[in-house]
Image (tube, rainbow, N blue to C red; front, side, top):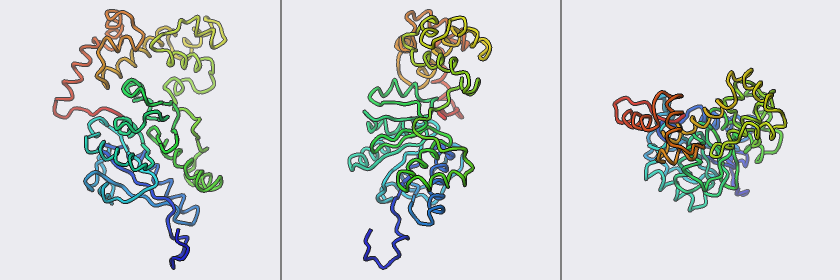
Length: 339
């Protein structure tokens, strides 16, 4: 800041954020981030933050809900920013054109801090800008990205701040990310005031994890059940036996079986098998891995056994699943992938 400037010092913005909107981006993720900055200025009674929306060509981009936001500027004309956030959503692979990836790499070469909302983390990973960084995307996309980008340290947290990389999952998680950034800039008092304005119960931090479906079904009070499911999720390629899971949780095998039957409605071995098969389906639809590679990655040593189990759950073989998916993408009016 130039203190000799005749303008009032409080009117000079201290931080400027740029949001690069990719086709079919998540509007709730973007608006959650922007609204946190707007409210920070209001609560602080100071224009601490500026922000701008950008696209590759300067034209407003349609979000996944079909709406557009303006004004939007061209990325090349957007000027400097403290952080450039990539805003993703549906069909993120198609949105990551060579021009987009090249532009992101140029920002990385200039040592610009980079962030991502929702599936925007895919664009950064595809550009090689998340290698050896902790990063977060929506849990639905996590499995495929872990396989596709092994150099990225993916986390199940709501968001991750690792040096000059700021990534988060979808939905309203960008609000939590921004509140933590604001807290680091302005101290411990402004962020809680923003939280009160938005009627939030609390500000979640980077130790909060994304809720997996089981948590949504049984709540957070059945710790043994949640821990058992977490062990299953962490050991898909080399599945644990039920006796091993029970031992690690610290309860009997019979107790694990009772918990699953009561609160999940199925035996734990079936739940574990279905978890592995759902992961296999994600890999089939979102990666170019062979069916054999996917079978091994999901803990199946026998391809015929994998195919039979897959057909029993989804009604068709893995090969048919992939073939039908590709045909659907070539058909007019095909539904997009992603969140």
